[in-house]
Length: 278
Image (cartoon, rainbow, N blue to C red; front, side):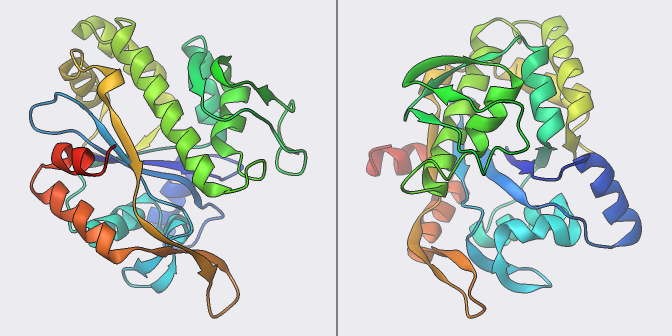
């Protein structure tokens, strides 16, 4: 199973924006701050997370070459799904998207999340102008409420490599979320799995086939999966540069991407991870 996880940077409701897009076909003021493909092998023994840099300069079906995160404002999550499917030659079964408010609300609803912070930093003032606090993160496990968690997954200006560290932080957060769900007993039986999804559903925008029952069934199916065994990596890139119009972009490493695509097609990300020391 492949699930595309998206984080919208819209100031309002991503769900309402998506509904408007589908009804009118007009653009909406939202880009994808987070694009991560979650791959669950057939044997359900572990989970793989593939982060896709938001500034990857790729072909967006029907629109031409531009930053991959622009697909969200052009035609919503379905277009981002189509773009990733084209890039990786794979089928995406479901998508899940949240926005700033929904993200914060869910983290607070579960009582906060323990995240292993890989690189210490303090949120930058220009970047956190809309936040309630300027949070400092220490190396190691930090207990994050919704506000701090949002700053953690969004920060990029505090790091020498910018977005590259941001996606590593997003991976650390998703690993922590998996640990919360799978190691805490929240998915140990159907009743608990349904209760968990009841907290998440109001703040998520999902495809029509991924209703609360389907999400709860997946959480329950993964109850024996070890979060520590999850493998996260970033889709290969060839560095950064500038577009003809002067935009700062990330250059895709198409050779490396084809290798990932082949591993996905063969359900062989285990071998790919071993070969690349992941």
